[in-house]
Image (cartoon, rainbow, N blue to C red; front, side, top):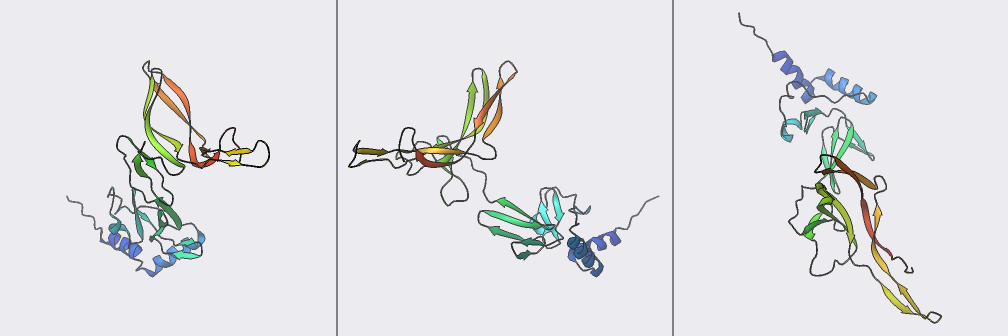
Length: 234
């Protein structure tokens, strides 16, 4: 005996919800959004796609994520602007989506793999880092933060492919003649650092040949700036 299941009523119900053609569904959606109680969910008919395309989700009241087509029922209130549910827009260096009443933003930078002898550099006014020679022929014109991928070793312990930030660049220094002792005044500025205020250090574990691990602490540089050198004067 064959068991035949008619899925047409279920498909038609999802189509009404996705397209907003059902007046009762639209009223329910507005009511849920007004109460702030809308839930993010993945319809069973769409959850079978591991990574649906954006076109398959947007326009149906859903937005594409790594989890599938996720409900985008509620609009977003963004600094006085009402964003349509499931909409997408750019803000400076990030792309934002309105997902179920929440504004979600992600940096628009492609993965960057630098060649040997190059480091990641954050250019002033640029959204994404670029690759630059670690030791160029000419000095770096200004103090800035760099990121380099290094292999860290301590004795017989090692950890590969660790991103290490450092400061490098030129800062202005000068010596002026003054009319009082000591008659010369030197101002020395060096390319100094500021640690990340939220996470000033990283705790890493090096893998040792004995099978044990060696804990180390790695400072995390947040930004670089020209500051007075030790022993200098402002």
